[in-house]
Image 1 (tube, rainbow, N blue to C red):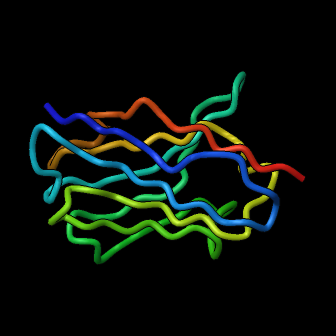
Image 2 (cartoon, rainbow, N blue to C red):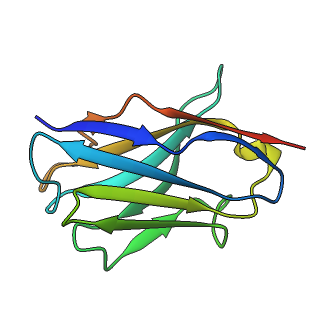
Length: 119
């Protein structure tokens, strides 16, 4: 089992930056694809960004491309999401997720961290 704990959320003004962290415990995530997702009340959870196990490949939702950067430090068993040029529409609960090798879906999820961007 993998436990994921997000941190770094908060209230920020539009144009500001936040860095989210996702600390994993229970086992190493060095072979796992990791992802960030977000959800607004009343809406479905949406994909934000993902990174391969070695960090060599990343992909982003169009809405955050060029503003957000996903990265990982396998030695620290941690994944990050650097969010710059934040917009009010980025307001959501942000979730970290882990995808085991050779599986399609994300198997483990964190509890989420709230990000609120004021205009």
